[in-house]
Length: 81
Image (cartoon, rainbow, N blue to C red; front, side, top):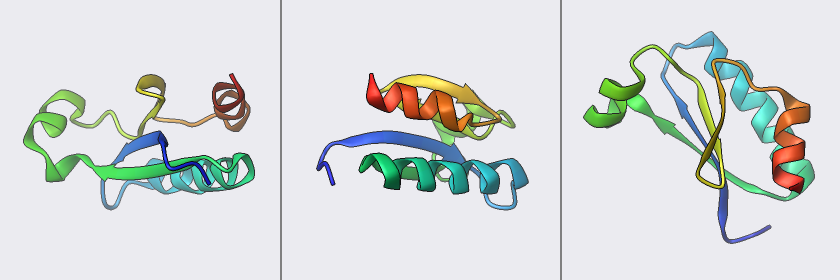
């Protein structure tokens, strides 16, 4: 697995969309051997202020890929590109 963090997803406890996004991200990243991390927006005041209820938010290589829903094919393409 790459030491470089490729995917970051902003989430919140109790968010059903976040739970689904995490399942997709975990599966796609495992297949692509890409590292990923979930970050709780409520643990950082600036993230909470910026993203409020707009979670999950998924970033690949620092660029926002998706908001609210994660498309597995789009994530695969972003990791391959």
